[in-house]
Length: 234
Image (cartoon, rainbow, N blue to C red; front, side, top):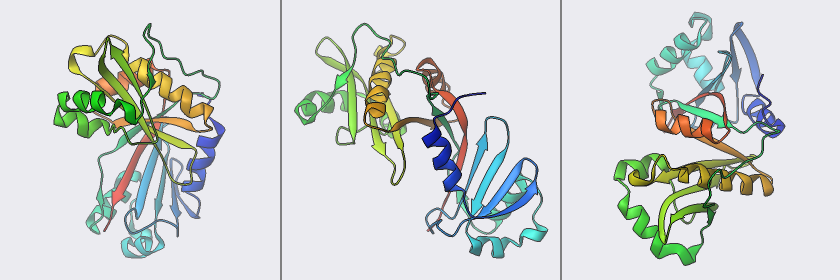
């Protein structure tokens, strides 16, 4: 069994804290008053297949829990019928509690600052629009580390801090001609080590169909925590 960091386990436990309705052995539904209109429902499917779900009490009334099928799929279908749209699910990865974040490259990444604006802008403009959108890497985020090939920035990883949480949510962007050479691993490893030094747990989050990103997460020592599905409300 994976040794996930205690702050991460506590964070997700609190995220689903509320009035619990046991529907099935592998599905636990919580009525959570603190969920917002922008996020009225969410589900977390663990690596073991168990599912935690949280919805607002208002949604619970609207979907009539007594007539909702006893499965995560049935619950999601009922929510969809009530007009609740869901974002595409993300995989969540975390470093084991006893794992050291390692750069894993002979040319380690360094932290980027506003003084690197010109080189970052050139790097960013070179990447495709789809890659920029998928990675969500920006120089003005909480922390940014980059890896260079000579004077050329070829890979960058950045993180944002989630509110009221121990999470530093990572993104990584690597130019196509620099992939498969260890640069992304170096950037992610350096950023992950920095995040832990500052008291945060690095979170690697990616779309489920992004096989290259999943492979990178595993190469960096991250282990799959679960699949997160969140509603998009008003």
